[in-house]
Length: 139
Image (cartoon, rainbow, N blue to C red; front, side):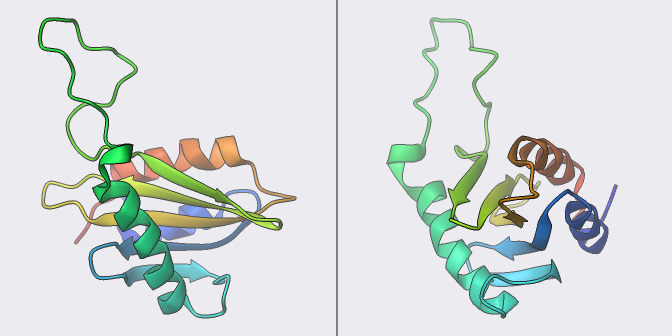
């Protein structure tokens, strides 16, 4: 199971990857970074993306309704844990994919991948970030 540095290096191997970070959305701090930052400073990017992640994770509008106890659970619905899996922000030049990481402790971290819009593959990035988030070992 990869640690933070290995996880970020794997994310950077994706086509079109420009930068990657593991961010704590409760504090806005980058726990690890690789590659470039859209604004030239990873800490600024971490703080700004943390605001977006915090809003998505905490606002009721994005939370899934509780499943009806009388009906069978929908296999397509996420189980217990964070209500949001990932966020995608599209800009004129790139994609920002924020993938929430579930942990055994109070989950407040996400992977942020910045992709070049021309060379990046958004579907592949979402798929790989899901796998990386599931296998990430936070030490």
